[in-house]
Length: 209
Image (cartoon, rainbow, N blue to C red):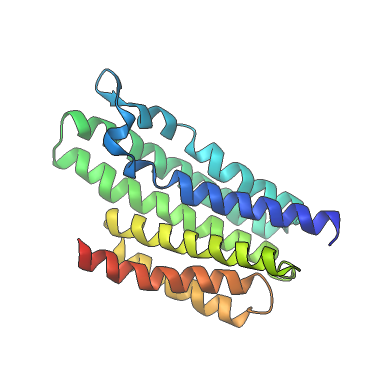
């Protein structure tokens, strides 16, 4: 394994891990407690989320020497991600204190839709940048990569279900799986796994809810 390949693999794994962990902050009990002025501790941690997720994603593109077109797509996706997340964070924090239809609109609908659109575009940029690279060369590395792909797909699914984005989420998961199968001899296989996981978890989440 060359140093460059190892660096790309590590950064991509860090991106997946950050996404799966950070996008479940809302599952922490009672937001880890009050933090003053009606906010929760997780509200303040949530401020770091775009840096924690987009940082390693963009570093992956740099390490993979992404094309200008891929960087342009990543720039659009990053703006959507940061904008949607900011709308969600503000509206969600306000809604915790003064719930109402306006807070719900900006949090659960507008904010989530823009945010998750950003996730999809950034994921597409990562897929394009790493399409022609080999899969991890060791069994352990491949197992870890597959587990992270399942975590990413499951996170996408639970976020889509909780964020009133279920049907678009399913459609994008199907698209990811289809693209991944077509490029299954490289990291596209991992995108196929992530998409397949989402296709399973979304219906299960809807049934539970």
